[in-house]
Every structure is written in structure tokens, then in C-alpha cells.
Length: 336
Image (cartoon, rainbow, N blue to C red; front, side):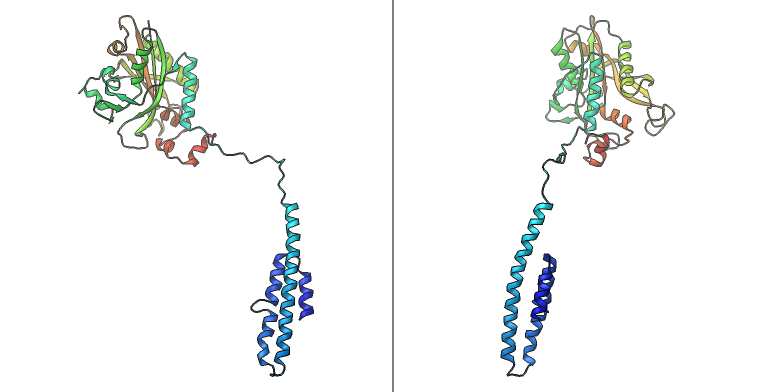
């Protein structure tokens, strides 16, 4: 048994084979263990000699096993140092740094288009006074037009802005009496049920141009230019009469559906047209509140939703996808 064990031990070349050898000879069911348990069946006069021989064999094999284990570990360590060496000249893994949200990308594209038409970006506050959000925009207290906006009130006279139109008033008061041409982008808040078409928090881009001899034709030109730059040169426009308390006349701006080309589909509700903006000529009262004399100045204003534009551009039928934080959706826009 000793000769066989030592021969087998010398043949073991790795840790797995060494462990198998240990189980075969020194384990609970190993050959040496079985031999030691069988001593009790020998004649009494033979047991001392057999026990002494068995103990000597166990000690010898444990000693040789320990020595062989040390040798094998050194060999395996040397091999690992050679085979698993890190090549520091290889390029590293590029870290994931995230990307821009699709609404941010849409906003930047809108900024670029309006910048080419001479509009500056004007930033305005999200927490507004009732005065700027309603009263100066031709909606005094108890005016029924206030019901068009479901408002979050911070206090009796402070609100989360329901639209970016208060920024128009602040821009007018900052620039008056000079002509002004700005867009006012930002977040708005309304106490509305979250559905596939509406969110309680959303973005708007408000536009304002004030000067002398500005007419509705100028507004139509700006809207048509924007639509064709944003959605394609073949786009067709239509303007429908509407009502907003801060513009007169007021219009809704529609564009032939980019998805079906005007044939009718679920995006345009089978009408062939999709609304992209509300607009109109600035109401004389609003001009006067902003510091301009309506006898000398005129202007137009418009408001559009980047979420609506992003949905049209990317054939998205549920606004909730944009703010659901689902990376499977967001990564489809190619920057995450």
C-alpha cells in the first residue's frame, strides 16, 4: 500500500488530482483508514504490530502529501502569473457615462431652429406669482379662462407655473421698449390625471416676437419654417381659429401627419392633421402690461410641447414612456 500510494502521489500534477489522492488514501473511506479499522479483527498478538505499521504509514503519507501540495501550489502559481498577466497596453473598457434624454435632444434641436430665425433663449422661473401666471396675461381673479389650467397652488398668490407664458411678460418687461424675439423653454405643472397623452409635469417652448409692423403673416411664416425644418420640407400647414385670453386673434397650428402623410392614422386620430402649437397675436392688454404701447407695437406668441413633437418624430404613442426611467426605451434614441 505504501509503494502504491507514493507512486500515485508522485503522478498527481494539480490540486484536483492531489485532492482525489488524499480522499483515496487518507479520507474517511480511504485505504489507510479502512486498514486501521480492520485491525480489530486480527488476532490479539498481531494487533500491536499492525497498529504501529498503520500509524507509521499514515504519518508518512500525510508528510509526503503536505510536501507535494506545496510543490504543486508553487507550480500553479507560477503558471497563473504567466498566463493571467494583465496586458496594460490593451485599450480599457469604455465607461458608461449615460446620455441626453430624448426630450433634451428635442429641445436642443428646437433651440437651433429658432436661433437661425433670430430668437434668443430666455429662461424664466418655474414657481410663479398669480400675478404673472394669470393676471398680467389678461386673466384677472375669477376669470373663467383660469379653468383652462388645473393649477398647483403653493399659496394663495404663488403657483407652479401652468404654462411658460409668464416668461413672455418677464421678457417684455426686461426688454421694453426695445423689440424682442425670444423663446421661453421650461417645465410646466398642471393638476391633471396622468394618461398616455398628458402628464402633470411637461415641457413647453413659448415664443414671443414684438416690434413694429408685425402681423399674423409673420407668425404663419415662423410656424411653417419651424415645421419644415423640424419635420421635413414637404410638410403642409393649416391654421384654425381658437381662443387664448392672452392673444387676439388666436389660432391652433396643425401640420399634415408625418406618419401617414395626411391619409389618417392612430397618431392623427384619422384626421390627417396633428396639432403642433397654439398661437396668436399678442393681446393689446398683455402688450400694455408688458410696457409696450399697442398703438405702436404689435407682436405674436406661440406655445408648443416638446413631448408632442418628440412623440410625432419617433412614432411614440404614450407620453409616459419619456418619464418612466425604462432604459430599454431611452436607449433606442442612440445616445445612452
